[in-house]
Image (cartoon, rainbow, N blue to C red; front, side, top):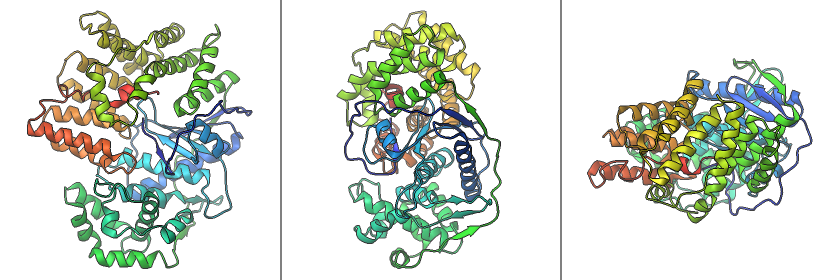
Length: 533
């Protein structure tokens, strides 16, 4: 599971105990978000309005229509960055975003700051949502500098009480990076993230990426038109530097202009015209039992206090009064626990290589605890979508590990996946489970590609789903489309190696050195192995 975080991570620290929340949890529902918070409900509602305005602003910038098929992003808001650090189990993290097959989510803190060079919780979330928005809506292979530069550029957006807003304020938290960190020459910056430049200083990269993006949007003629031209050229297959020179002009002149720009007074323009957005927000208080399930789901998914969350879920699930949602969270945690040693043994390996090794015949894991919990959930709620998907996956994995491809339980696993899909047609996890059922049984036909295409359309931000779809396209000899899907993750400064490795394997398939995605073991992607862990 990959997370995009706003700071570099040096070490992972295991938290000794789960943080405690004293307030009542509330849930806010809006057009694009499900937001959980343990603070004041009025603040949660205001926050939901700002997030919807921010989404509308991004759509206005890129002239993008709504896509009602895509699923809402879940956001957990907590009181401080210390709580965020305990949730993820790593220091110096004010918020994070995790694109997941079982539902992408973000964790944000509610701290506001008057220090202009300090990050507020809202700025962190805006940065992370910009990533989510880009991966959901961009089909072009955005390069590393623009992925991070654009997120930094829009993160400082402010919305005023009178309906006005401010866009493009300087990212003062990046000022010292531009002023004191080593300068990155323009050609190296444009190619950052490629294997030739991936070891350069990441601190300087963020600052200079923001500076170049800000200049191209606020000081250059066209207010971003040159960026659009550049991205379109990349999408047509032009080489990076050639596309940049065609769109931005002489690169040496651009380099000099950027050096002068960061020393000048950075301008930005406020707007008094309100942004049109869907302001239908509902805030609902959660019962103590519902709030506890939300807390433990957040802690389980964050990973920093996983063992404590699992213990608490076992205690909660041990009660006869445990509801279906609590039992599903327990089942997911037990499923993750069963795979933990496998993950630890493979720490640091390339994701695609890990998937290949897993299919090659790793020892089966004991999923009995997860199966018991999910069966209890289904006994209480037979049509529970999450429980149905997880039941299908557990049956599929157990049968596959045992090499039992003649068992009638394959039909049972298929029925659970289909039941979840019928109840929630835009659930990518249910669609992915069904595709994996077909692939594991060797049932390769056009249905697999259609199912993966649908799953990808509902959650294009999930990189492992993107990889699975790309390899299915390649298996059907649609190599160019497959590589185009992977290029944006190959350019990602937080994990481009996965995309580059996948592209190399698809090129090998094109060249005939690998026969198909199935024989290469790559129809099973890392999401199947690490989802919920």
